[in-house]
Length: 429
Image (cartoon, rainbow, N blue to C red):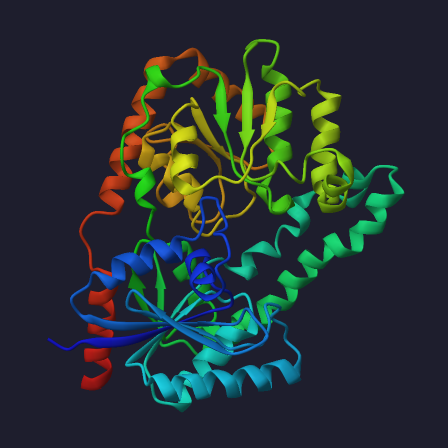
């Protein structure tokens, strides 16, 4: 058996990588699935060593731990598309790859120039490479700021209007990122994804790439004890953390306003947001115009006792908390994979989601979940009402959700198997 050396290249390090390199605390939440995949990959009999390459600090650093060589290129943690940065990144990355001499390169993400540069380096060094678009920037630009007008976010607050240019920088960043993304996809020979929606987007830019189907991994915390109806609070809703207006939490808040008079104990939980939504100077400084709008809506609808902003939780803590909720709602306007929704389905929770991106490929309306149009809080409120009033329906949807995820993640090739197949194909050609 041939043992492979694989180089992973990403715009940023995972939580576990940051701990190894700098002893920093892991960023809690439902993300960091790269760490989950890395653990599984290292158990593959075909893998000898994995190099995880990115930039975080201002000095180059190499640390080996548990079969992984973490390489910090030392170019800081802010990726930008300036000519000077790209030249420096290209030279530093090429040097690291020449030293490592991997058999294959895996590029994670397409949102920064690092993916484009990594693919260029792989071709120059004649190392086969695979590109995985984690979230397609081209899809996000269709929904600037989650389709929420600035006037609605800022109201008459001059401080929020002063923050708006910085908040809008997210939108501009996405627009700029589409340029890097397009160039990366155009030169990719292999693209890794787990949904046809992503493959179709990429095919518009590159008709010649080969599709590699591989389900992005779920943390083991969500694959243990299942969600049980009797252990859940009857009117409790778990949702997503708001990194931006694209997450659509305002739609869920409006839906909750329609429900609060019918369900006295209604609760909505948003994870990882307690600091931004708290009072005091720190909270005000961290709060975006969108976060401020959420607080105004909550006050306007009298939902102060119904909406709870949680601290950051580890995957295990989050999974345990989700088991106490009756329904999971994903209100995002666009999602490439929506790992938090899949995590809820793996637990066996009844789920409701906006019709977004690839979600309709694994959530089938009325079978293992419910779908609604992003902006239609009226429909979302009626779906939640039906679930709250029908325990048998909750149990049925939850059980079907768990079964569908078990099928989604069963069988198929491991990532190590895919790497081996790609190398054989490249050498045969």
